[in-house]
Length: 295
Image (tube, rainbow, N blue to C red; front, side, top):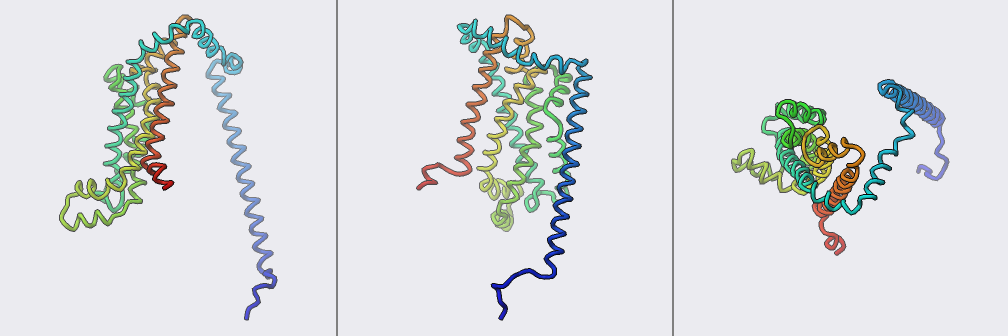
């Protein structure tokens, strides 16, 4: 009978220990090289930015808080006018929310279709799975602002280019997330529907969507938060919404900083409110009600 209580050292252990220490030293060496490369790239990037900025990056760094101080100072002097500015720019805020909502809805629908077409076991044309995946990669890779600038040049300024640009990017981003959700879905309902002659659309709607709908909605709500910020940023390039009004208020400079402060506060409050509401509903969709969990 083998004695399991005795020492476990053997002739092979020193070699294993040496190999492990050599592997550890190699990993530390590689980590040090990567850190040095990262630091060098950061330093060269700052130097390049300073040169492109006519050497004014470091000279103006100490004045980075001058603009926020001016905005806060002027807003505090005209604090009684802030409610009027909120009423004035509220329609622009609603326009921004509409852009985000429509683009999220369109992107979620497009992403759901592309995700099913690119998931093994669900794809309508299995041979084209790599094609649909590359399409989603391209849609995710192109930034919204680049698409918006091209569309503004073609279609002119307004909310439509922003909506198209954000929906295009959202389709690729949600398609990737939805496809990962699809990988965990059971294919037994799909096989059952196929056995009775259901079409591909019927198999997806009746066999897959009921399983993945909570996660789909959770990811869509998360993307809605991101799209609100994206639509506000696109306003700076002429795509309408609250971002466009903020750009105009900031362009006027001194004398309009109170309007800029009102827009900042509106945008901040909206993003926080949407974040809290969507977080609650995401938690509800994925985990159920807390009372049910504790019961």
